[in-house]
Structure formats: structure tokens, C-alpha cells
Length: 357
Image (cartoon, rainbow, N blue to C red; front, top):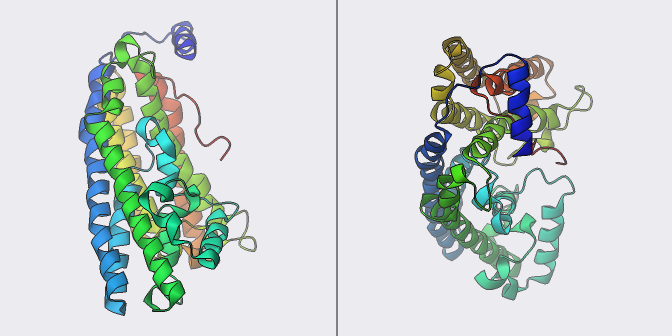
């Protein structure tokens, strides 16, 4: 709360009136009910749809059933990319966020843990009671992608390793349902929603409704930074000679660009649901709202025009140039959100959650 008070004093000293939009309590709940809850509901539903596809694959291994399981994976990943940026509140509990999808895995922990599990083939660790206590790197979508999209699909093998990996896949699918169900429940009618609803008077998690708005603004800004620095920056690196295609998110399933597109669409929605009303209450807000809206529109159109998949693009001179131009546009959008929006709505940007990643 201290940083918010200091921020407001700075605004006064700079001549900005502190008389703008003030109904952050309603605005924050609007984000919860219209934005967060529906997306976690979709995540829960897609996770529930993946489990029977994995089960069928394990019962009747075939190329057709493997493709159906891959489609189920894509549905879950689609839903995840639309809500992954909400990393506070219920997502922080029990490491839910990282357990659902750990990326980037800078130390290749998932591969190392998977190798150990394949060597031991210990079925006891796959029970629901024990599986959630395994390394976060093997509990979610990152390892499931390795299994489903492997060049040599061991899930189709009927030997001991194939059977074990199928059981591991089923354990992951059960875990995804448990996590997504808990996230949806906490936000819809549990502690997550309650803490947002009571934030105006202060509670154990938030000192004010402005602090909640600051956190939501940070989630929006940081997601754009994540696209620029990690989802594009990591595979691009500093030069074409140093480009690292396999640093791209979801490179095995060839959906790195689709992930970014979904990130941008969802970020655009968060801006409109959570902040556009506050912007438009300001005398100069209409111009900024148009600028942000147009910038999002341009970014989404640009990525739709890129011909992926992303990994080979980073080493092709012409396509790399297109990626870098797109990266620059998203960076400018991030700066627009980070530099102009906070002053307009009198909400501080808050802590950069990418620090230390």
C-alpha cells in the first residue's frame, strides 16, 4: 500500500488530478466474473475432454487414437494460453501454475525427471495421492507434449515402457483436471473471488481494490513482456547464427505462433474488460483507448499473417526479419500499456513478475 500512496503523491506533484475513475471494486469483480472465471471454466472443460482420449489411446494404441489425443492436448493448450498470465491468487497456491505447464524449462528438468521415471517404471508414484507431489516439471502439459508428439511415439508400443508411459499420460491428464477444477472453483465462488470482492476494505491478501487493479494491470503488461522477451526473444536470440529454434514454446507440437496469437487476443480482452472503462472516464481517454485498441488489432493481424511454424523462421533471413518487426510492434504495445495507461487511470504498474525468471 505504501507504494500506491507514494505513486499518488507523485501524480499530485506532477499536476495530475486524482479525481478519475474510482469504482475499482466493481471493475475488479467484473474481470473475475467476465474474464477469469469463463477462461478457467474452459480450461476445466478441455482438461476433462482430454482424459478419455488418453484413456482410449492407452486401451487401444493406434495412430488414429494418438491423433485424437493430440487434438485433446491442443484444446487444453488453447484454453491455457488464454489464461496463463493470471499467475496470482489461486494460481500461486500449491504451485498450480507451474504444475499445469512449466515453461521455460531452462535446466531441462522435465527431460531429466522423465528419463528417471522411464528407467524406474515405478507405478506407485503415478497414483493421484503421490503424483501431485512429484517434481512440478513432470506433472503437466510440458511432459505430456513430449510423450504425444515424440518422433518415435512410444505410447503406441505395447511393451513395458509403452504401458508405463501410457499410465504416466493418464496420471498427467487426471492431474490437469484436478488443478483446473480447483482454479475454476476458487475463482468462481471460493477464496479467490472472495478476496477480490472484499479488497476495498483490506483483507489478508490485498490492502485495497487499487492494489488488485495494480496486480491485474501488471498481469496484462507482463504477458506482453513475456511474448517479447521469452516467446520471441528466446528462440530469436541476438543473431541468426545464435538462433535457437528449440527454445520456442511448444515447438514439438508446432504451435508457438498460435500460443502468441491467443496470448494477444486474451490480453486485448483483459484490457477492454478491466481498464477501458476507466480510461474513457478521463478527458483525454478516448485517444489513448483508440491507440491501444488499434495497436492490439495490428499485432493480432500481423501474427495472423506470419507463415509458421516459428522454429525454422528464426533461421530464415526474410522470415526472421518479419518476426523481429512483429516483436518490435508488441514491444511498443507493451510500452504503451506500461507508460501511458498507469498515469491515465491512476493505478501503479506494480512489481515485474518476470524478474528472476
